[in-house]
Image 1 (tube, rainbow, N blue to C red):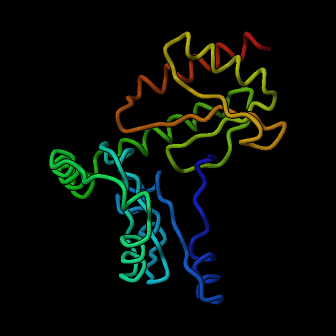
Image 2 (cartoon, one colour; image 1 turned 90 degrees about the vertical axis):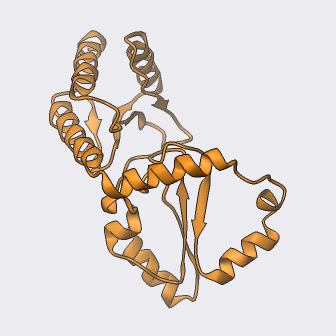
Length: 208
């Protein structure tokens, strides 16, 4: 929710100490962090105790997800996961599109370079806004507004300007910390980020 990165090294130490599995849902890390290989590569981690799940509908731009784990885990899922057993196979077109996406993730670093530049541009400009920007080095940039009504009003004002920025409210986040969840992507431009910052500054002056 906040664009923060889980302390996976410490969590893996706990899993090893207590003979447990560590399930990593890397929906936002896969394709972005660790040169595209995800949060495990970002931390330099590898372990048979890790059950790694990656979403294919975000950075990969297709649909579905995958699980990578110890063969015993994979076999258990194949034999007992009802959601897997009672679904149909993915169409060949999806497999072909995914193969192309994986090649782009592996070979085309310019998208990640561009994305990191957008993150830096947004964070530099957001410092002058009247709301608190939480620490995040990822494309998810949380801007804490506080009051629910204000967060919703800002979100609606942005939408009226053609900018989709959802307001996240309790109970999804703690009471008193309603926020705007800004999601940047490599498909955005520097001009897009500038338009967002300009709109936020204008709305901030209006609400003040």
